[in-house]
Length: 241
Image (cartoon, rainbow, N blue to C red; front, side, top):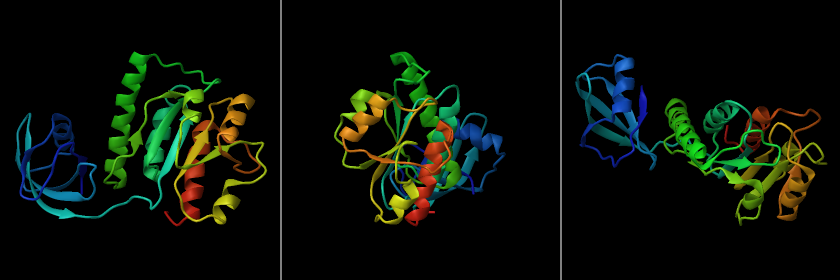
């Protein structure tokens, strides 16, 4: 059943004119009157809706029933990702949503090639938010992961965080899988460096602020692989996959 994010209050019995973007998707899918779609607004649960009317510019639906179904992990999981080159961040955001990340924090680290001005950062945020919505629609999540504004690493690492921070580093003496195997499910933040990795100064600062240094094993993973592999390990070890 086609699923669409609808950023407004929803309730059973409501007749609703869908946004232009959702209407375009419905036209592309060639849906017809009386067909059933699923709507969610990120507040939890999802609604079954029947298409009442379709014209060139508008689509009207009626919400018929509500389901409390959720696809969220029992623990918060943040991916703190240093900005990679090119379009890699698009792929990372999409897959992180599919794998169950509950928040994504883009970081500007010393070795990041990408440098975002305020204007460019705002455009990137809008672009990544669109990817989050599309990924949630596709994978069946009814809540959107939080997207934090891109933040300088030094500023970010000094912030108070109730989550356990995990710094992935080849120099670590313990693996993530071994650590997770002996830990109860809990809120965690996974820190991933850019293509050249975090600098020694950045790693030392993270550890000084309480980060736990762990590795992904003997192989050095690319930045676009490491975070997603780490999320998968955590979710598998703690029964969320």
